[in-house]
Length: 485
Length: 95
Image 1 (tube, rainbow over the protein chains, first blue to last red):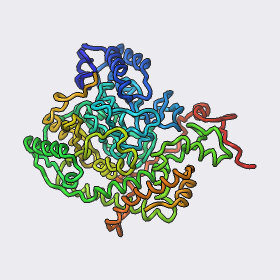
Image 2 (image 1 turned 30 degrees about the vertical axis):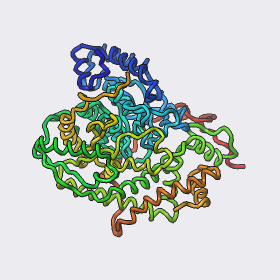
Image 3 (image 1 turned 135 degrees about the vertical axis):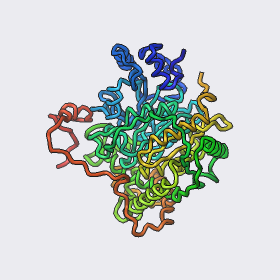
Image 4 (image 1 turned 45 degrees about the horizontal axis):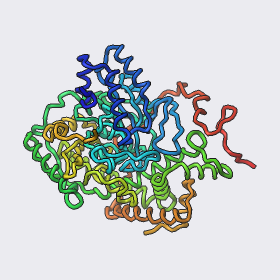
């Protein structure tokens, strides 16, 4: 029995039944990582010794299988883990050792989840392919000449290739949902504020949100249960009643309204992606849901506003990397200002510099009103547009991405073309709403297609129930698996 | 549109970044292309629209001003490229 092939909920059962120990399970994942990591380059750091120790302790405590106890997982390398490196896949943080734990990591540790290591990403979470990592290029397990998506590419691959039972990523403009779509796994961006950002290295603070990557929808509900909750150390954390997302997950969508919009169809959408959408619509009808047409008016404007807002916030957030308190300091410089300049110019990669420049430009004197203020006004209109849409439907169904995974190197020459791959995911971050991506089938090249469900703020339970229906109709895991062996 | 070399250099200085001549020209073109796309915002009339402050209804968070746990001096300096006498060390600022 290869336990790495099981879903998280199946693994919990196996642990509870005493079929397998957490130690043996952890060893199985370590062996699996050893076998496929050379082909995929997903992990930046592994913590196998402490993982095995932790697993043994859980076995000894006798609660393996309760919640996440004894379950091996991976973390995106932008979440702080005390005593370990947190590099954000950047040269400038290559030697940074976290002085404290992020809230999500501390919570998972307390729950008994077993950390296998920290996984690759686009530098500072800026990118859509994980090619912007300063350290390695992660490959898509379905075709290793293709990108896994990004920025949480390592998180997506670790789950898709059975190198972790689940993982966490962060989503600022689609960085969980887009790689989940491209790698054939489930990825959720929760409502802004539902999961604490304390200890998540900031990219764009008003958009960033941590969320799970899992093998299926039920797994997603289990992980969300563990990471959602109020945290006084994150001032944007929502103090809302705890919800058990696994409860009534199989309730169905009878009588529910599923919104679809023409804005997410047409030119630019790969025909096979559209076909998967059409099949999803049919599946919802069969399940007793009502399909309603909705208008979303601001798709292009959402992406335009996103790049101004995200870059403006990034230019401010990344000002802290100056070679003084942490990170890498340039070896040669003349004076303090030159030290800042040289440390930053040598430490940041091209995309990070581009976004700092764009953000600084948009915030600079004379341009603030034309760009930043305009984008924030646009943001208000987008929030209002979604509020209007969710008066006529319960959740909205769209493709996660217009196309399946593209080739490594295919879009690196043109930043704007790379940005366009976030077109369908960005509006969700702009409005703070939750969304989930789940597999909708394979295209003719055998690459996964992602479908996205969007709901109003704090509708994760409703969204998960709708996702569960679609997952059963698509039956993706039963029919497809990346061939790596 | 293309952002001029002068403007790129000005923004680079504000950003505490530096670029070679070739990089400066390229940055001007790349930023220009993104800003052209951003111009799609102008198709929407936002006159009188309030700029977003918070996407969800969040309140300011207050707490009692009580001394809590924080990093020790040693922990705070552990990642410093240079430290001396319990302080971060930087190049001379005042001549």
